[in-house]
Image 1 (tube, rainbow, N blue to C red):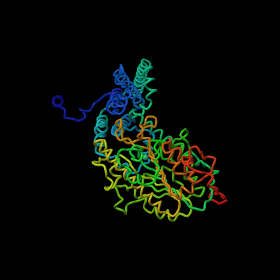
Image 2: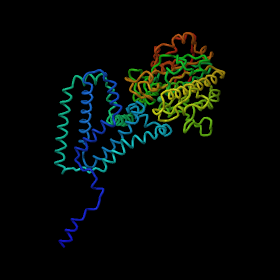
Image 3: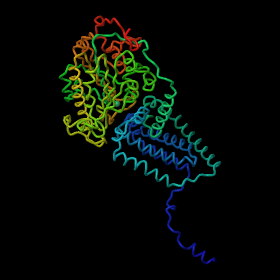
Length: 567
Ligand SMILES: [Zn+2]
C-alpha cells in the first residue's frame, strides 16, 4: 500500500489549465481594474486634459499624475463597495466592456456619452444604429473589453471569511479615502481653479460618466411617467378667419451647419438651386441643443432659452398643439427617427420608400421621399395648413448614404461608416454633398409651393450643426457650454410666395434687412404663431422674427377661431 502511494506522489501531476489561473485577492483585482480603466479606457479624457492644460504650464506632468492617481483611488473605492462575491465579477466585467464601447465612440467621434446621447441612443431606430456597427468597433471592444474581461473571469478571487473580508474592505476604503483627501487638500487650489474652468472635463471620465448619465436618463423617464397629464399652453389662443387659405411648410433639417451653405458665404457652391430662388437666409442663428433629442423639442417649444430643456419641454403642449386647436391643419411627415413625441397628437406620416428603388439608400430613404404626395396634400388643403417635413439631411457618420449619385459634386468622398478612417477632406466632401442635396430638395419644394393657386411659404431650420474634424471633433452632441460653433450655428432659410407676402402684409425688403440679426430656436414658436396670426397672451412679439417686416394695420380680422369653432 505504502509503496504504491509513494509511486503516486513521485508521478508528475497531470497538466491542468487550473494551474494557469491567476489567484489573488479582491483588493488587487480592484486596483488592477482601476489602473486598467484609467490608463487604457480614458484616452479621450487624457486628450481633453492635455488640451485644457497649458503646454507651458509648470508642473504639468505632476498635475496629470495626481489626476491619474485620484481617478485610480476613486475607481478602486467604488469597486471595493461592490466586492461582494455574488456581484463583484459581473460588475467589473460590465464596467470594462462598457468602458471599451464608450471609449471607442468618444475617441472616434470626439463625443461624450451624456444624457442627451443616451436618450438619442434609446430613441434611435435600428437603421440608424446599424451604421455604427463597424469592424473598428468590434476590434476595439474585443481588445479593450472582451479580452481583459476574459482574463478577469478566469481569475480566481480569494475572498476571506465575510467578517474578515468586510474588515479588510472597510480598511482599504478608509485608507484610500484618507490618501484621496490628502491629495485633494495638497492640490486644492490647482484642482479647484482647473475644475471650475474646465467643468466639462468630468463628462469625459469613462465609464463613470456614461453610467451616471444612464441612471439620470432612467430617473427622468420614471419622473416623466409620474407627470399626470400634459400641460395645456396658450388656452386663450384665437385666430382670425381669413377668406384665403394658406400653407406653410416647416422643414426641420438634420445636422446641417450654417457655415457650409454658400448662401452664408461658404466658398464652395453648395446652394446652386436656392441661390437662384428668392430666399432669405438668416446668417446668425443658434440651436438650443447639439443633438436631435435635446434640440428638436426646442424648435416647437414656448419655453425660452432661460427655461428650456428637452425634459421640461415634453411636459407641455407645443406649437403644433396650439395651431391645431385654433383650426390649422397640421401634418408631420418623417424621414428621420421620429418626432421625439412632438407630433404625438397631430397627423403623422412615416414615409416608406420600400416600393421606390430610386429613393432607397441602404435601409433608409433619400429626402426627396418627403416631397412624394406633397402636391396632392397642398391641393387638397381647404383652410390653413402647416406641414412639417423632418429631414434626414446631413445625418452622420455615413454622409455618403444621404446623397444620390447625381449630387456627389465634391469628390473623392468618404464612403465609410467609420469616418475617422477617412482623410478629413473626403469627409468634408461627403458632407458638402449632403448640403447640395438638401439645397435641391428645398428648391423642388419651393417650386411645388409656387405652383399652388394660393399663398404659401417655407421655413427651413436645422436642429443643430455638425463637427467635421475641427479641433479633432466629429459629429455633434457636445454640451452646449463647450460645443464649438460648428455644432450650434445653424442655417435658417425663408421663402414666401408673392401672395403670401401680400396676405401677411410682409415686406421682403424689411425682412432681408434683418437677416444678420441674432436669432435662435426660441424665436420659432412665436414666429409661427405670428405667421398664422394666432393671438394669445403667450405670444411674445419681440421673439417673432417676421414681425418687424409686417404691417399689422393691413390685416383686420372680423371673426375669430376659438378652439376650432368660428365665433
Ligand atoms: Zn439631429
